Structure formats: C-alpha cells, structure tokens
Length: 110
Length: 115
Image (cartoon, rainbow over all chains, first blue to last red; front, side, top):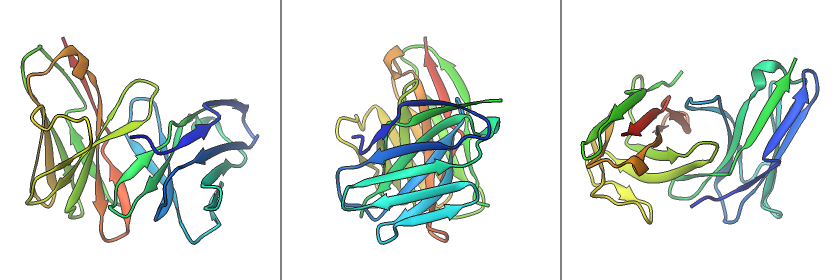
C-alpha cells in the first residue's frame, strides 16, 4: 500500500528558482527518506531524516519533518536543469519496509 | 559507494513464459532485499521482502506463486515472473538494505514487456 501523499504532483520552474515539495504520511515512522528518479531509471537516495530530527541539510537540499503533522518537505535551492526528475518521499517502518509517496515530477527549464 | 546491479534492464517475453530478474549487491552484503513494481508515472509499490536463507514475505495482494523470489546468498536475490501475461508488463525495481550505513540502494530497474 502507498503510505504518503505528495504535493504538488508536478512542478515546473526555471533554473535558479527554488523547488519545494511536500509529503504527508499516515503511520508512525522510524525515519523518512527522499529519493530521486530519472525517467526509466532506478532510485537515488538523497537524504534521510530520523523521526527525532526536525531539519536536515545536504548541499542544496533541505528537508524538514513535522511528526505531529505527519508531514515532510523537500526544498531544492538554486535549481538546475539536471535536477529534472521525479522525487519521492518514503517512510521506513519498524520492519524496515519503505513505503513510497506518489511522487512529484519536477521539470527545471534553462 | 554501495552498488546494486539489476539485470536485465529490459526484457520482452511471450505470454506464458517465465522471466527471471537478478538483483545483486556488488560491494556489500544484504540479508534483506526488496522488490517493487512501478507503473508509468506512478509510485513504487512494494511487492515483497526477500530474506536471505528464508522465504520471502509478500505484500497483500501479491501472488507468491506468480512472483517467485529466491535469496540464496547474501548478495543475490532473484524475482521470477512465472507464466507472464501482458498485465505483468511493468517496471520492476529491487533494493538492498546496507546494514553498514543504514541505507537502501536501488537497482536500475527492469522494464518487462509481455507480448
């Protein structure tokens, strides 16, 4: 079953702009992870935030987690055309299973 | 970094035949691997958890006799789609959990087309 809802479903921005996408989930989690998928390819792990963390940074990525609202956001700053991809949040439960959100398709135009 | 090799990347097969997909962790051992299915422009749906040396655990609604999973070693899990039908056409992705760095590494996926 699918755990999370993501919004927006699609996002089109220009290079240099920031891209923000949100993820909501339903059950308790150990951590929440964000992945990137280029068309027809596998997933690349971007960042993991644990349930006791509220914010995390990695390069141009900033992730927040609000466990009271069961939501997370991913911010990509100063976007580049190479950031064009689909982005998925995934929650890890106590069994080690990942459940993915619906994904946000991001298009960055030069 | 951790690498998971998935083969084949693309396969076309006839209805009624079986197809085997391999998922191999190249530089780490994975006691647990996962198999996902993804339809176009949709999210990944977990099919089953593959456990080294024991039976796979299937998600609700996934036919275990149709999707055979074998995890015979700490670096290899295979998914066999038996008696394939056109509705089995999809993108299948495996992932392996790296116990060392608490991360999941994904294979590059297999595009299965059943004609």
